[in-house]
Amino acid sequence: MSAEGMVPAWRRCLPTALLAMALNGCAVLESKLCRDAEPAAKATRLAADMLLYYAQLGDLSDRDLDWEHMLLAAEPLSPEVRVRLAMVLDQAGGGDFERALVLLDPVLTSDRAEAVELRPFARLLAGHYRGYQRNAAVADRLGQEIGKLNQQVRGAQMRAEMLQQKLDALAEIERSLPIRPAVTGRQ
Image (tube, rainbow, N blue to C red):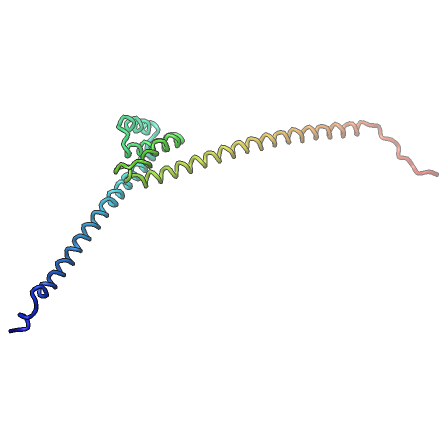
């Protein structure tokens, strides 16, 4: 009897079975990686599309922005339409950040697949819009402070002019007084 005949059948199949399991494991791992990569690739494409749309909005005139706003407002408010409307409001005449944030809020809180894909981009926009609002509030406060300081400067200038007029009047009075002879010391 040969040595090969003494090895149980299961041991002869073991290398083949291990190879089959390893290859199957690679296939399962590869398909899992592909499934995980697919949403990321889709989200990346969506973000790239949104960035391109935002860049194109910057080239539009106010009239074209109004037209774009009107077209988007006529569509159902899907998460993508909400994000696009928020971007239009950002670009339109000084930016209506309050309304843009109201539009983005459902995208940030929804569990719908489309909203989840747009959430990172919507979060980025919302962060920028809140920053714009903070900056606008600071600019308003600084404008008020500058207004108050300008009032104080005008008041100080008026007081300085009044004091100068008083000094000039006193100098005129002094010049109009008769010159008194110099008093000589006692003898």
